[in-house]
Length: 447
Image (cartoon, rainbow, N blue to C red; front, top):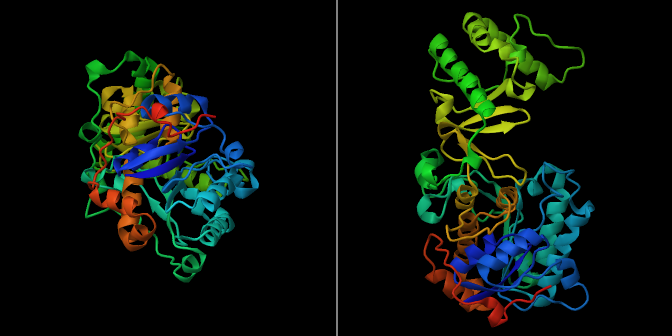
């Protein structure tokens, strides 16, 4: 058994993965009170608070073998201002470095949004890799981008496309870290062992909860159900009119169904292109579309964002065969194979055939958390937020296990018990409920 520290811990996705690999948490740090309450309830240990305070002056993080950290993604996320290291939260990476400098764990596993390795953050990425190598950690100069939907079920995969950047490293000393530097990512951004991600089926893969278990709280409103019925009629109408199994891939804007596209001066090129495509689409199916609009009162009762359909469901025959998202940009439909990434804002996947949103339990299953995992009496909004911010258990397990096995000689030299635990671990994570109260064992310090 090895010991690990869990920084920026959330509700414990890394804890689940590292525990399944044979690790025992000796420290966890998280600043969000709601996440702390969930972590402590499930992992039976006290959680420390602000990592900045705990790493300034006297080092409060105890010695450990593996450090895991899903450091804050907002400075790098597309949904934020992308200020990177220039934003205060971006500098929290330096607190990780402070721990590495003083405690020198044998193995590290960091995680962040894919955009961290995007073109706007090249200098930030280079700074992170240079800093880790200067601290003695052998790690790739190119990002490892991976998603749980690329993993087959027997390796811990789950039906969610969730591209994240993983940085795995082993302590070998500064000289070797630079001399043996490589730009090869740990794993390719590709399906593993011949797995076909289109083979996912939400119904059986999670599995979805049975309907008699699901509260009416997750049912769609009559208005939302009507939106789906109207656009399902559209899908069936176009199928019958064209005989084509595929709808257009561009966003369908009912307000742009005009014989001649209306493109005001100064319209952005991308929008002008969509306006022209919708006009051409309307002309090609005018009779059928006019009848559809007439059946539904010209969509007058639909908000502007609900008069748009983003079809990503390929050859699905009906909207009821898809999963949906009610987005500001329109209703997005996708085949019911794997879901888009869970996000911290409330934009929960709609199961069209069931007429409801995914439940918090189902989103927890998407993140690889076991059914015994308990969110207590907190609001659903808090749970959805935590799942949107969390690390996927199966992906973290696969990445760390692969890193150790690929660097087995080095890991065996600096931390043989880590190597032994990983070698003894199964290919897929088995997340067990803690049997020992870590508070009583004194393996973590409260804030």
